[in-house]
Image (cartoon, rainbow, N blue to C red; front, side, top):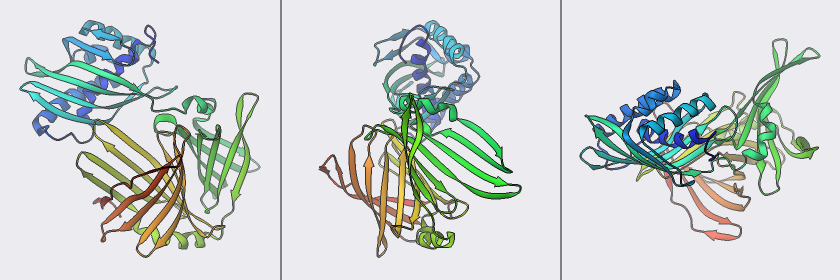
Length: 409
């Protein structure tokens, strides 16, 4: 990823993040609105230039003596001309690269000088996602904001992409007709490419016979590919894949057949109040969550994101279901860093308690107890009251209060 020559352009991509950072998300304390707005104009121009593969326009947003330092490799690009040459190689080698700003924080330093720090992500058409943490110095030249200095350090947003690369051929939309039945599949990478998600539907004429969702990922604890399937009637299954002739193939399946759909809907009805969009922002940290029913109301689907602008971010999806065998609510969580967990839920008065077992991205095993409860009609709280990693107890986390957003249910 850091080889110079054919991959010098990837080093320069981290510089793009510096210009993009004011364009997304909240800014850190101390940045006045006018400063943010002025630099955002630079960010918007940079994004337009990048998406248009316009190397000249990208380079024009740097100062003449602009300098990029890659603290991971020690590579330094000095001067706008060298930056221009590197950008041309970038667009020639991967014109479909998509850039994204993950988080940011902007601070004024002196009149005409500002510093920004953040996290960036770059997704090629194929191959692993690339990411970096960066600090950027902006200066004014002739009344315009320019990028003067960028220091970046690479991150590893997808520790499991290499193990899943054998399944990259699945990405896309597929259909098959056999025996009068039509099967449609849509497979996508999750953010950071640490999981694949596959939605499927089987139909006969105008009748839908079944549909659902599958999540496929690498299990760093057992060193194998594992998948989880959830069908629209409430059934779910887990599959451990086998390595056959150098390729991964579905192997042993543990199937949990559903009860009547109405029983699943009734069992989950007590969580209907969680449906909607929720957010908590303050003290430099942001937490956002959305929860919705799948069309059959056999499952709840949650998406979450927590971030401290310019420092870190964590996001993922979770699926909440009724387990007819255990006669209790169960959930699964898959985060974009490559970790996953499974939880068993119970109710204690107004509180919902989730006991979770986690497999962390590096393969360590952890456990936690999460407590969720309503706080009035338009708020809820989450708190991790107990947690341990590889047998080591850790302190409880703070209680996070999330408020329902206006367009939530």
